[in-house]
Length: 198
Image (tube, rainbow, N blue to C red; front, side):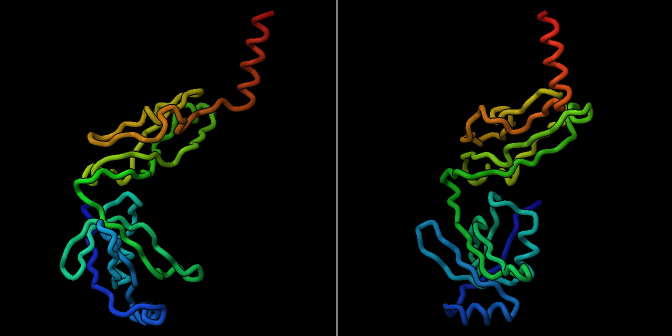
C-alpha cells in the first residue's frame, strides 16, 4: 500500500457552531500539531478522509497536504459520534524525518499453530510492542507467523523479527504467544511423571 495522501485546508472560524456547519457540509474539522508546538486548525473532506484512513494503524505515517504544503503525520485521535459513528474531529501529529520516534506497533499474528491442530490451546497475551526508529523505518504492523509452534512452546518479544533500523523497547522476556497443553493432557502428564518416580 502506498502512502496515504489527504488534502486539507486551513480552517477558518473556531468554536462548536463553526464545526457543526463544517460537518453539515460533508467536511471534518481537525487540528495538526506541528513539530514546533504550533497547531493548525484543519478542514478535510469527510469521504476522502474515511477512505484514506481505512486499514491504517497509529504507527502509519500519512501525508496531509495543507493548502498545497505536504506534511508527514500520524493520525493520533479520531473522535466519532457514538450514535451514528460519523467523524466529529481528528488530531494529526507532525513527524520529523530526522528524529527517532518511540511508538507502539500492532502485532499481526498469522498461522494456525501445529500445537493447536494437535489439541493445544493458543494464548496471545500481547497485541503490540514498543519500538524506536526513524519515521522512514516505522512499520505499520509487525507480522508474526506462529504456524510452527508446538504444544508447550512460546514466542517471546525478543524472538520477533524486526527490520533494519528498528530497535526493540519492550522487555524481551515477555511472552507474545504460547500454545498450552489442554487441561486433561497436563494432568495426565503430571500423573505419569509421579508414577515414574514410584
